[in-house]
Length: 138
Length: 138
DNA sequence: ACCGAAGTGTAGCCGATGCTACAATTTTAA
DNA sequence: TTAAAATTGTAGCATCGGCTACACTTCGGT
Image (cartoon, rainbow over all chains, first blue to last red; front, top):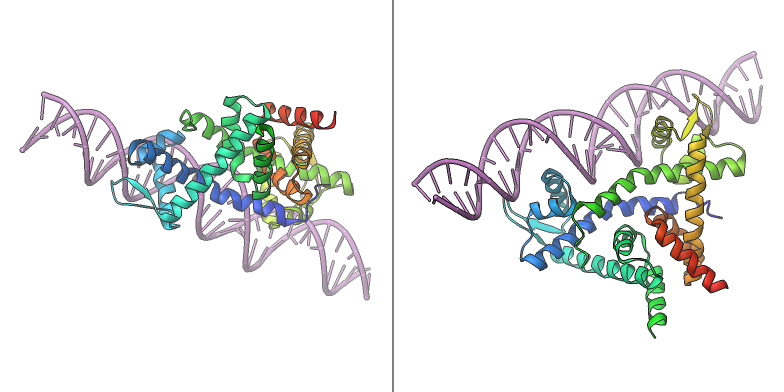
């Protein structure tokens, strides 16, 4: 049943991975900037639990791809493109999180799983999750 | 709410990625071997839509990590460890797929999304999905 | 003003996942 | 049987995401 039409599906998954970390980063940058006024590399380093070098390189890719701007020894800011992506990612994340809670999953697991799942959920599935929650509440 | 206790969650997601492709491979190998008797590199190359070199390297890692065995110019076979992983992956995949269908998602999307989601669903969430389906049917 | 601490940058390493190009082997067909 | 086609192996390259070690800048406190 799932032998999949060769490349189609799997290649989509792999290209998702390319943007997955970028989305995690812009989401984190938006979050940190909102809560503390500005976002520095060290904040991201702590948030993700990786070295500041890893963060520095990731920021470089974000800047290269037009998601963020920064200056030497300065804080990181999102471009409008980056803000758009962050907003969408946060919305998706929130839907998946609330959906998992509605499914009966614990808060801890919902939080963990939603971070892993949010990048792989299509619009159609997101919509189905929302419909389910409306039915539950309505 | 989701600022996450620093490294914990995210590092889990990243280590998941390390085993994700391995799982995709063993799942595909089991599938192909079941349907055609044996699995060769070219089958995987076509299945995933990647070059035979990429497959060759991936197989090398599977062999190194004890999931598969092979000989020069020969087919690929799963070890018992590989078969165990393949079976578990297939089961998870099937649950997620059927759950998405039960949620009201189209077959096409369910197939695509389930491949992306299967590696990021915890046992607890899988259980919740099964409970949901039982409730639906019962 | 200065020194130490904190933060950032840079060099250089590794493994994973992808590729092209070319060599070697195996299969298939004439 | 033997030549062509299909398959697999190898060499070499790129990017991404991770690291340590060391250099540099900025910030805070005395």
